[in-house]
Length: 340
Image 1 (cartoon, rainbow, N blue to C red):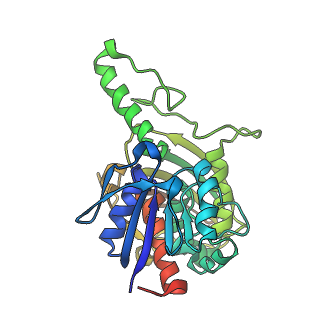
Image 2: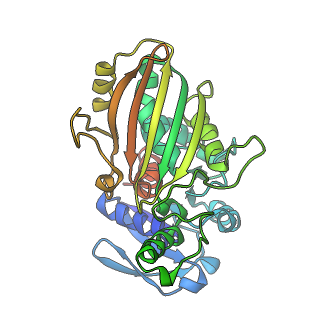
């Protein structure tokens, strides 16, 4: 016996990945519905070897459906997620709307799977920000061993994190560099993204940080440990898919870099590729389409007591969004619904 699954936002980058991953991981699906806004109504999307025709989110009845994976942004989620939850369908939401709600669990299954039991307060579970998800997967096993005091993270985030419009802008501006007649002004980003980097993701806050940086701090504290101190600088880079992060970690206890490497090799969801030679590390283009969070460049930071540096790369459309949502659905099935 399987589940009745709804994918909301099925025509977007993340929604399509959700459908792909449900099929790849052979999630026990008895029935599946692909929903979209009216402007995308009737669009065909793939689910394994099947083709689904999208239905209208605005008129869909969630009664009798088990799980709804939402990838439609905060404003639409605010309207439709409570309706789905009230109909008895558990919502797994990829937007930022519910991440900081104390009555909604924020889940990365490799880190805090047991927190899924809190879903019943609102019948909603939140999926974290893409940059947070891969970082806490890397931090969790090290935190369990030596207790993290402080993290300094610099991100190198791909344009797909800004949706299809971000990817299109990178593509169009890159072409325009070689054909100056067709200059493409920034629309999705604040400055040219082609052949450039932009230290600005989301809106600025009063303290000078951006909302993206604030999200990484707040979400890591909720998922991993509220005692961990974090400071982040988030940068958009001219990459289509795959987020990278440079992590500087300070521990309460000494942790040798070799032991850290061994711990990470044994940790769920992580692939360590760390050779001190040319090419002995992973870059964003190599992680596309993969489930793993890749760790490279593990080394001691001698400037602080008990410090380590590492490089972390992941497919942001997968672990940063769609994969994590499907993994939450798997945990929900195993611990609560127990149909599959």
